[in-house]
Image: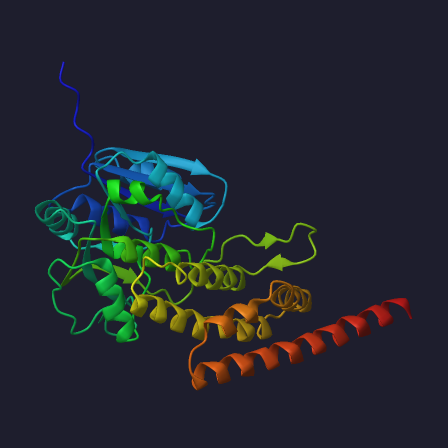
Length: 346
């Protein structure tokens, strides 16, 4: 008896309270000239009936599966979907995105014809009519088949590489061979994923046609707060992800398998962005949060990582400025907490 062939394309969609946007996304999936063979939606603890809407509107989608879980963030949801997917190609979509009808026909066809690890198309920044939509990549030509590392270098030499996983279709065997997964670094889990997949891809092709609309919402949905283990304050996801990504990128930059230029570019970007972590901490409204993260910066020797990877006077000056700011903020936070304790015992 002949065994059924595995699904060619699996699409993974993490969903958290997506009811305002799911009808448009599902319509665009149903309109594909080459429909996905499997659509896996992970309802990540939604409270607005997103799961029921997917079941109701998605009846025409082949291989639709709905997985419900408590809220754990987009990274976990995508990893769960990857684990369940059976396709030879893998794509990710966010619940508020919209796809061009030719998205998967173009990228799967390209990946098949050229034996690609990653096939990537351009996309639109979709501003919902508030202003004109703009291309993610402007005036970037078709690359032909190159390595992902070459694309990575080209983009960072131009100082622009958005970390978007949903612009691409990935060969599943490529993902599995390298053991890639999304790190628990919401909301910037794409940074490490995009970096790792690009520098590993031997066959990559970007086509400049825009096939995806990335919704730039005016008001972002706020996920449930994540409390510290002792319940003293709410963990701040942006600060947590910045700290994680800086350390992860510093480790990637140490790899001897990467070209010297790639390592230099990775270091340049994470030193610049890592320095800005202090501004993120400064802007926190909760004094307990500020004190906690300033203490972690000191205890985890965060600035030692930046000093070790900085290059040239501009970056040295940047790191020094932000380190001095961190010391100043730590002193202010300490005095503020001290005054609070004195007032409590007065």
